[in-house]
Image (cartoon, rainbow, N blue to C red; front, side, top):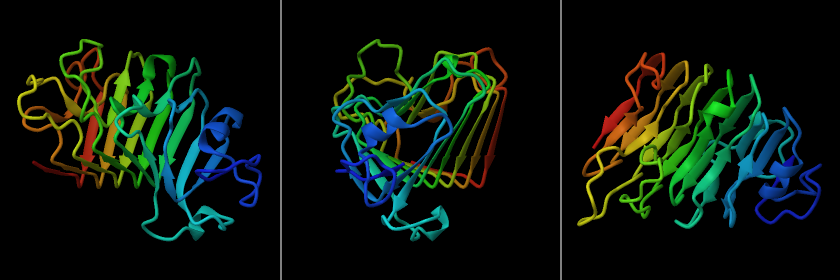
Length: 239
């Protein structure tokens, strides 16, 4: 499916692009969504329950992903009002979800919410993505069970799949304003339940300040609610 911010077609070609909400609704299992570079304002929660590959950063004339120009990204902006930029939830098994070349920004709660308990043995990957300024204005006193993971939150578990983050930047997520309640449970990425977590060439810059964590889980690596194994390769953490 070919997608633009203001698409009104059926998504069958760059000349007949569809909008993002329409593409997510129309897509079949295993579909690819190609998003033209630009800003997408969800206006309502963007949700999918399908195995998809979602690629951003297109000019709008490419015939293969390799023709994309370096550095271009598609932006999903929640404007601090939409709870999530993307919400993944399903009763599927063994699915693969892949997202690349996006900036997910200003979600009210989390940029990505992944209902892992409904995705047993499923894999999730993000490549060349930026997660910026998410969860800035969410009331940290609320006890909604989603205190952690302002960029990515993995909820309600049992997943035995894998998550791979490659060349991703996490910046300015879950910053606490002066005078708000300190909440040390906050984390930039909350990685519950996955069997294996791999992060390569990722950078964390000024997240969860003054208190919080870059990475978190509800139990340690190998614990009942934490990942079974975690690998960090050439990653940087800068307060």
